[in-house]
Image (cartoon, rainbow, N blue to C red):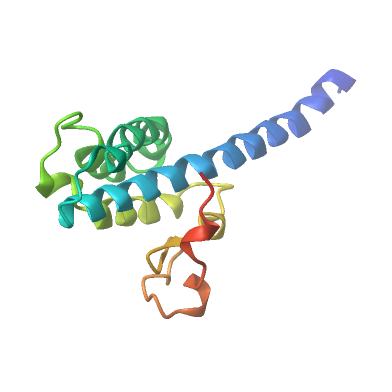
Length: 149
């Protein structure tokens, strides 16, 4: 085997690690935007400074949808239904369903090789690893500040 071919396997592994590392903040940003959109719409806080999360969430969701769809088409449809489909004029009924996005991401993460759900952190007391649904669980005690945007 030539030296060039021997170098390809470690290179492919490194590229996959970089891809996965770049995906973490995109997923975190999507989750944060979904949570913020839901909070603002449910509490009728619709001043211009709070509406930045609608376009931000739209763009972030668009960035992860192809990757999510590769492992779970249904999860991608759920995320799209909440964050993408009705943009820029979403209905309160759709945009206020952050739990749908959270569940879809949690489901897809279990199928994504090389992406550690623990690196996603938690938001609003909900983690994204299997068994993290209980906000009092020790494994989901991370805080909103653990989310990197």
